[in-house]
Amino acid sequence: MTKKPLILVTNDDGINAPGIRTLISVMNTIGNVVVVAPDSPQSGMGHAITLDSTLYVEQVFIDDGPQIEYSCSGTPADCVKLAIREKLTRKPDICVSGINHGSNSSINVIYSGTMSAAIEAGIEGIPAVGFSLLDYAWSANFEATKSFIKTITENVLKEGLANGIVLNVNIPNLTEKEIKGIKVCRQAKANWVEEFDKRKTPQGRDYYWLTGKFVNLDAGEDTDEWALENGYVSVVPVQFDLTAHHYIQTLNTWNLK
Image (cartoon, rainbow, N blue to C red; front, side):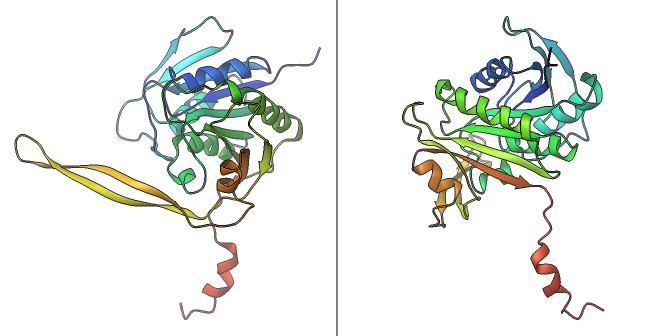
């Protein structure tokens, strides 16, 4: 009998989010699942880790699935660190993060707690994938994501990933029949044009709400944004070595002595 893979599941929307409950159900068809996820929403936390406060981890029983689950008071990156060091008996065969409620395409990968959890696993040498659905609603319908998530996960388990690479997968908010397929892409050049909505408390103190508009600056047809706009699931290989290798030679021409 083939040994089932050990799968670590996490997210940034919290352990009770419908997205992670869907991801757990898909992973249960593939392997043995251990969940370590935040006990409350941690969206936009990026790769933050907890240094100056106490971390708590508690086993929870949310549904009737065979998975083992723990809720964690920390960030998504904390969850992965704690899972590897404290809750798993061995290194998992794969870490999957999500399914995020909302896009993590293009520049959003920088801010994403979902992707930071996957990147943390990648740093530990674990093949990892972050999954996101382009629907921010808590009541989002994740049914159309299941077959694509299973296909991508099984391929990663079979083929592996190169050291230093994790996958950023975004799924358009369409029915399964409407989705045209899967495209391997590059990250689109885009950014947020941000503003702060300034208000006052009843006591007269200023406070701010961050608002903004996402602007795609990339007309390429090989990007994640193009794929998603045209009905495809986008798969972007992400590296966490942030060195701009191509610029080293230029810097070496500077008078830095």
